[in-house]
Length: 158
Image (cartoon, rainbow, N blue to C red; front, side, top):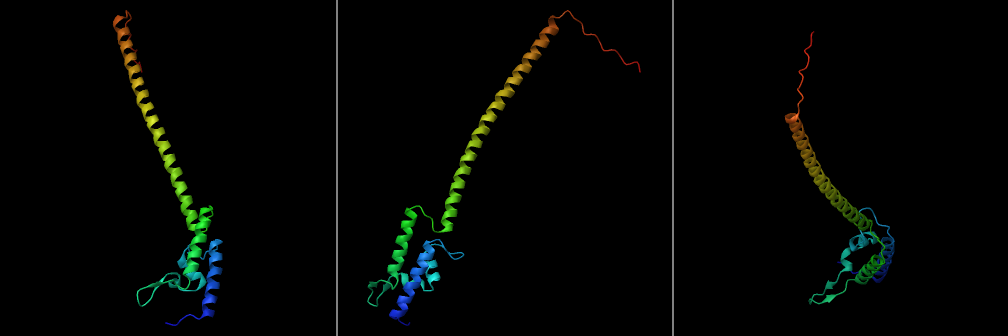
């Protein structure tokens, strides 16, 4: 594997910084997110340069662009803490979470209204049944105590 020359490293760092500024400004490539993978792809460098490396003796050393990865993460966190959403996916997730919360509230309100209406329906039906029973009782009472006779209906002569 070829070593990076100082010129190549400086050129790559400049490309990474330019890509970092574009991403943090919200100019993401289609399908991209505000993460190191997109930063590396936008800058045209490999992602492995953002992570620590192991020496042959097992000790760890920083990757050539690890300081830029840390700066990117720090700036991204600062923007998020300030309430600015860089990644449109994050904005969409936040919007959908808000919609889900509103819909849950609406469903809860509808369930409450439905329970109230069901209770009212049961009460109304029981009152109607009681009124019908009272009307039938009064009709029977009138029929028993009434000196009136029921006149049969006239037959049709046709």
